[in-house]
Length: 391
Image (cartoon, rainbow, N blue to C red; front, top):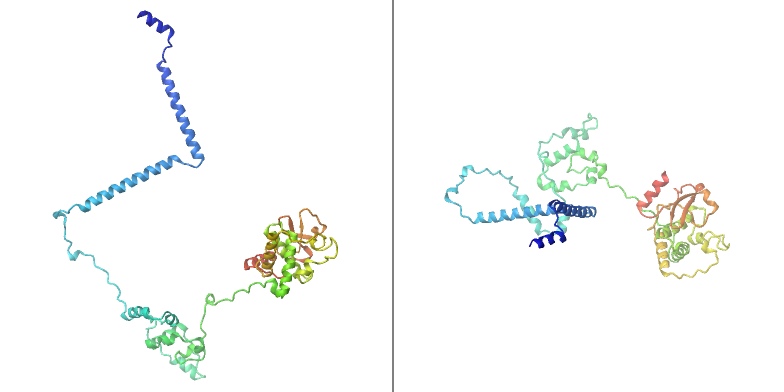
């Protein structure tokens, strides 16, 4: 046995000491806490707040548990019989007095109840009755001075009472069955001196607040087709020429760039410096090779329309522009444009307004801002262009 113990002490490894075990446990706990902290940091960085969410879940569960407990307690209390000693009779004298409700007039109630059996159209066409207020029931002032002032021209001038006072007198002196007739009196009857009203009302104009006067609406802008008098065949011809310019000049551009090309054509028509019809502007100097206003008209290339989708878009933009439904405020009164890969000399005399796609749009400085030229499109676009031109 002694030899076995010596052999074990010599050849078997001794176990860890207490300090080593304590260090190992602390190391494992530290690594676990570090992993938890790293996980919480990742969740917080991703926007997943786990700790507040868990606290909210615990609060909701506690609230739900408390509500269930109260409901169960209330159900138990409701089924429990009330002992005799708890039942107390409340004397009638201790009851709270109820405030007396205003008694409505039975005639008004009957009138409201009778409206169900009336025709809706007849009820809507019936003029409203004028309520007899307390001001109308005041004693009327003797209108003799007013009558005297009217009958005798040589009499001293008398102050004419206000319209409210005259109306109070007239309503106070008119029986209820004639109130409806008084409410339907027109300004023409007042001007003609109707005997229903006091004499002073016929000579005094009725005051009307300015805020209640309906102001006329602003006339909508006139569409280009109406300004140019285009109808039937002329309209179809102008639409075709404008669609050609849009298709061959800018079919690969964004939609607003294609709208801008159509607007440039119409701006030239209304400017006075170019022909006053759309086809004349589009094909001006088309007989001069590479010296015309729009390159596609004189470059000698085939004008075969092969992209049906772009052609449909060009026709739609042309039609809506002629009808005044399209106006690009940023383009404004531009009359020139060029592509980004072209550098013409005339840009030094132009004011650049905007760029869409590869096209930049200009207007000559010498031609002004074009405030006298027509504007079409929606009211907001017109107001924006006018505000820009006023600067």
